[in-house]
Length: 356
Image 1 (cartoon, rainbow, N blue to C red):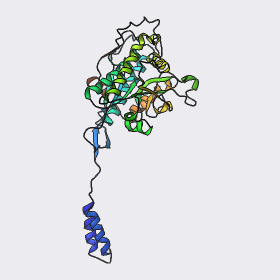
Image 2: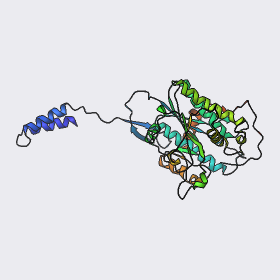
Image 3: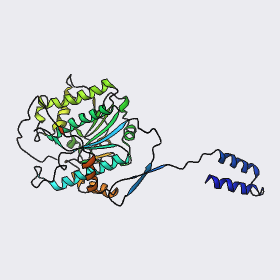
Image 4: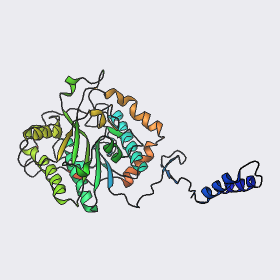
């Protein structure tokens, strides 16, 4: 393009009647000092199994390694096992299995698009406690992962009925746009309260209850005191299942670890560090079926979205779920997690119900 401009200008300069000499000289000086560099693009295979479908994204020209790592993680306790003929969780088993596979595939696509690490934790043993308690143990494991890498790490941990819907929005950008700066904050883990959504979710439905289905966290092992405070927070939360939160031990005692955290934040035991923040903004910024960044299609109001929302994302981004799940099972599984509490043994279930 620059070469063509120079040639054209020289040609025009041969005829002063067409282009004044001063303009021609100016153009020559400008072009000679203009460093033309085409926009660099990175084309990466999405590995979606549909003839090598590709997506073009801007190539990062910053340092080879980002200032912080980012981990997108999902806790799933069901679909990773071989499909059950007589599943313990009977209600809508096939539909839920399909939904959770789709969720994992969508989140893997998001992680690949932004060069994040994706990890699915699905081989866990809650040792008789409600399986939801594994989420706290997984969050602790992700902090330890950051410690092993000795790098600051952003963490997004979701239930398996959740996915990132803002596919082209980097996690750090979303945090910054909503005034969350983990680096300078006095908290390391953030959740949101449930909020009313007109015509969909009444204020009486939420009861100002927090929701632990989506966790945002930041772990910086180089900030030793803050990092250790985060670990102590997660350890205390887990230990509380044997004392302050004994009423939320088993599957029939909803809302499990979520109800426990509400108690701890309300009573503020002296040994419970203040490393967890409940964001004061509307739920839709962080969580819930109508979320702007993450959509958490829980089992309450909004559950009807499960009928089409996951399929819509799969179709929009041409994701082959079978191929993605195969990739996850080969390369993206987290370590087997157990919720071991030597302080106590879970009380026998009073009843087994499908609560999800």
